[in-house]
Structure formats: C-alpha cells, structure tokens
Amino acid sequence: MGDEPEGGKEGEKKIVHVYPLVKHSDMNEEMRTEAIELTIMACEKYSSNYEHAAKVIKETMDKKFGIYWHVVVGEGFGFEVSYETQNILYLFFAGNLAIVLWKCS
Image 1 (spheres, rainbow, N blue to C red):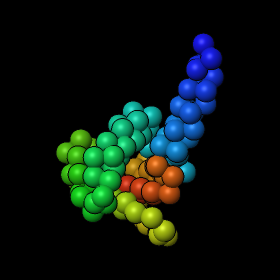
Image 2: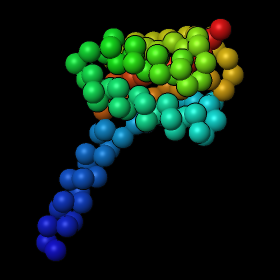
Image 3: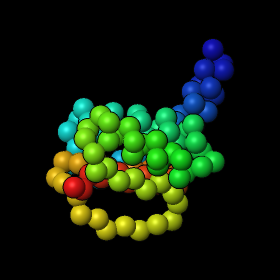
Image 4: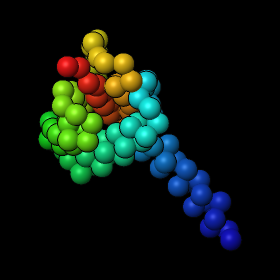
C-alpha cells in the first residue's frame, strides 16, 4: 500500500514524457487514432533512425489511406505545408520529438 502512491507518481511522470501530444489535427477520429498508434510504434521501434521511422509511417499510411502521404520526424524544425483537408497530424512524442504527417496529391 505504501508503494502505490509512489509507484503511481512515477508512472504518471513517465506517461507525461512519452504520451503523444497532438498540437494540430483535422483528421477524423478513426484516422487520427490509427495514425497516432502507428507513429508511436514506428518512433519507439526506430528511435535511433528517424528517417526509417518516417518511411514506415509513410508507407503504412499510403497503404491504409491512399497514396501521397508525406512525413517528417525530428527535433527542431519548422514547417509550412499545403495539404488536403482532414489529412494532417502534427504531434510531439517522447518530449521534443516532433512528427508531422499530411496528405497532398
């Protein structure tokens, strides 16, 4: 019992650092949920290779939601893109890792 509050606090701290923070999205709920789950999986699996993580995200989004998806994964970048409405997601994961994915045909 004495360990529960302490363990809970530690667990909460870890969740704050690894939970995805969506900064902007106009995707429908289903697509957004799938994209976030895919992004987390790719970024955790390829944490030392952002280029490979972006490639996995792009190829999976192309297969699931049609071609012309674009993905940027990294730290410390700005962006301005044209995109199809209801097809953009901008989020942070694991602190300062930013991911932007959008569709533009």
